[in-house]
Image 1 (tube, rainbow, N blue to C red):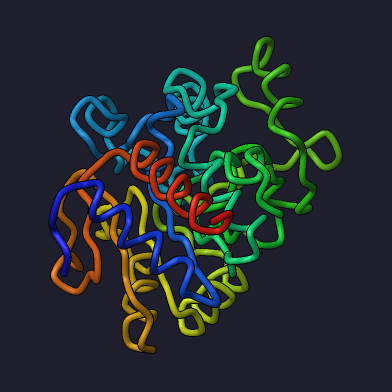
Image 2: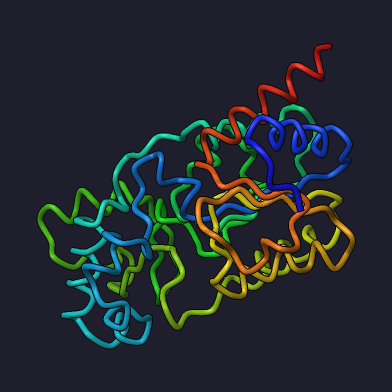
Length: 260
């Protein structure tokens, strides 16, 4: 595991990217905090102000008051703000343009990888996407923007087609991950030669199994995260830095070597 100064580590990761034939990037909350998206688990985050036990899928479906509280939390908590991609998102999009990216596997629900330029079919959203709202009865899907307009007049929106319960198309506590997305992400993790973790503490499962699958299959592992993770000791390169800062420097080094 490499733990030297940042410039050295940046060069090391750039070299790994250039040598790799298929890179998988795995992103967590730390990848989007520089875009103003709140980190749920950090001090001052959403779960320091709200009790996660009040936000389960079971309570959402069974209690009108819970649905009202959850919609209020989503609006007031900053999750629905019109955030913009940061340097880290654009760096990952550049990996795709260079032909190095197999896919992005993300725990984030903010749609910022797609907004930065990654192809939607290459982005596997393990925890869903807050830019969509789904009816739990007829499975109709609506843009979140449409529902936000209704929330100015309604405390709890319902489906305009069947009057069913509407839910943000993100995975709630107690709700299963989308199985096809999970299966596709697992396949890509087991079939890459370089796996880069950016901004994830790797403590939420089953998402955190992805770097394990990659390592088991022989891939090299890079971890870029401000705080320690359970897989730090298995990393080929470990960088304790902000996602945007590290990825911007890495891609600058990659560009310089590609054009040399």
